[in-house]
Length: 640
Image (cartoon, rainbow, N blue to C red; front, side, top):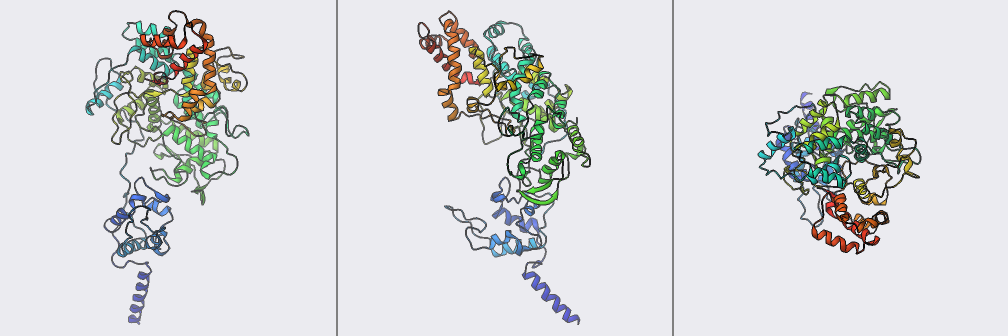
């Protein structure tokens, strides 16, 4: 009987081995047997940053969730099937047209992978085919600020130490006129007047630049009107478009303008957006799209994506469909955040297919606290708002100061600004600005002032460049005007401003309310409060159906055609020329025009050419041509 049992056991083992259910010999060694095969044949297309066909083998979790491997069942695993097939269109490694085909895996290699799957897809803890990436800290860090020159602020001392370390020759400072124009456009979105240019350039006070920063930041109305553009883009606040007709979207214009006007502390600003009032709920409610949409476009998932992107610099869009291939965030994370705002149980969908699992309301950083999923929606949102603005949530602080640095300097300390998992070019600078914001009781204007008063901000700007190697900061980057800045600057120069009639009345309600007006009082209507039109669209203003943190850098063909022949710009220039022609023959007209548009006097050649363009005597058509010539200059369209 014992001999029969041994024979039977041997037969069972042999059969199981043939079927791939048991190893042929000793257990497969993952590090020495499996990893070399995968590196040689699979990682190029399915590892690191690559995930062709939606398959990533960076980790066991990603491999298993791809459904190509079934642990313990190699014969039911598509992974093995694709290695063994004779079909050239299906076989892996893939046979690419026009390229020398890679040889199929050797039978011995496939057998090793079979045994590995049969043994349960054993994976070494912590191993990944993805390159080791920078992991940003969560909690705030107060760096040691280097000793610097007299008059330098902390930014300058950190940056000068960086320059020395990276052997960067410090650029020269800009002229007074250039600094005035740069600062004015950055802080209030308008160029300085000719009188302001003359006064500032002639001022001999040593602290005039510092005082100018304070003066411009104190212009609360103009500051708020300008920064509406930045926050409208980031918070998806539009005045028309998808969702408004059927009530599937709401504006936050009144709340936003009043918040900027009073310089609301940023922590309170964030709390009122996440746990909103009726006036501010439009941001987290997102857009209710018509008809059937992908599961990753539901309002709850939009909430998860927008909140994580805007306040934490986290891309949750990839993780809203499946576990991210580019960072640590998972489908569970995306749905956990979405469940915070959901008023009913949320089933999780992977690649738009139901998983049968219900999401549990969770917060991304449990080190700081948790969401009580048993509480009603309103209470969960308050909890999330509290966790987001927790003093120990350095991630939120770093994200917003990085955005402000990018607005002022042309490029973020972390680039791009929505990828805060990327290593900053100077971690001390980013951390310092983050703790400075908290020290200043979350006053964003104080951070802007610190940047604007730094010698670093006052350095000559360079043209943006992106190389393949490590980025090295060497000073500010020239910035293109936004569509709103471009139009406001043209209107300031020509004196042609629109009046808020018809549809525009709704947009200016916040302005009227904030200033206690019963009706519009004739003040200039800034472009930030007008609806998106053909001209602004061509200049890069988005429709704001998505969060937008960066406008296009390159001039498009549509923009060039619109600026050359568009009726809207032509109308402004025609009206402006009509108003200015009577003054055009007066002494000093060209000088005043150059000061208004470019914050400098024209050269002798420019004065002569301007006279030829306008005609002698000046004609309305000639003045219109001169205006167009000025406004097409890169010097006008860029903030240098």
